[in-house]
Image 1 (spheres, one colour):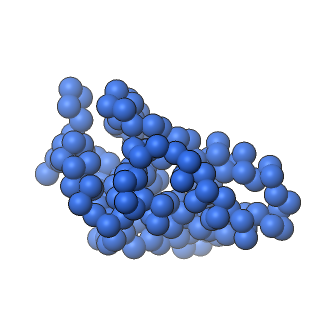
Image 2 (tube, helix red, strand yellow):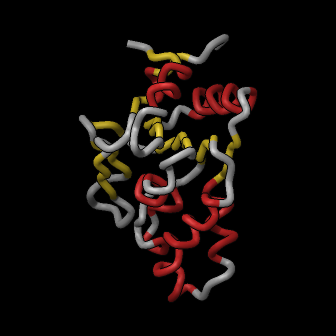
Image 3 (cartoon, helix red, strand yellow):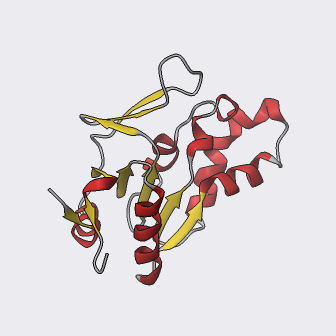
Length: 158
């Protein structure tokens, strides 16, 4: 059953962690949702871009220890309606496999609302990234937030 993006955003506001998590990797559909969000005053942030910027500030041996803290500092400075795209870099060994969900979930409380586009497969209430034989493999339980398969989202006018 399709769900309207506005209904999902509204439902997200009642959660303790206001991180609507959209799972899937259909770039055309992601672009459609992102365009809609931009038109409705959401700020869009490319996570990989920011993480690479943060990484330049620390030697490689310190980055794993600092990345989570630095992401939290960055998010605190942002507005209250943010969408986060292109976050796969956070699955890497160099980023201590923090994963996008763990990196942003705790930042989305109080007045802050976030939408995280997660490039993964949805299995039950788990987002699964990569395959078990790869070093970037990660299973993330999503039960603390509102989550949905990208293909089940309906965008007004789309």
